[in-house]
Length: 158
Image (cartoon, rainbow, N blue to C red; front, top):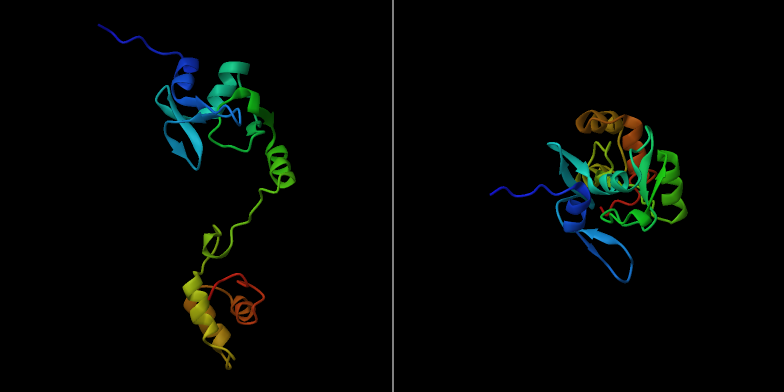
């Protein structure tokens, strides 16, 4: 006895649950950063993109599938729209969802909050401190100066 293969539309329906209040179809299977995942032809794909393609055809090159509902786990095609990366960012900003990463959560941060606390123990700085601390922590002396003067890492709870 062979198990019949489900179509992509059936698999999406099987792994989503409609919410009568929001109208979202919440993804109930695997998630990454809130976005649904679906295995297609041996590759992990984003479920909302697959839902869009099942309903509307291929996604044009350079386009993103964006959420009107701001729910990354939603696969309701009525909540999805095509847009460029700029359209997606503009939508995000207009809805007040832009929260820049701060402190060590910033992807390019070289310091941690505890590093900043240790650096601030050197106030007032003595001659050569900025250069020495910069070398110790792998940042520029001017970066150390900004930290000591609270011009950078102002938000750090240190």
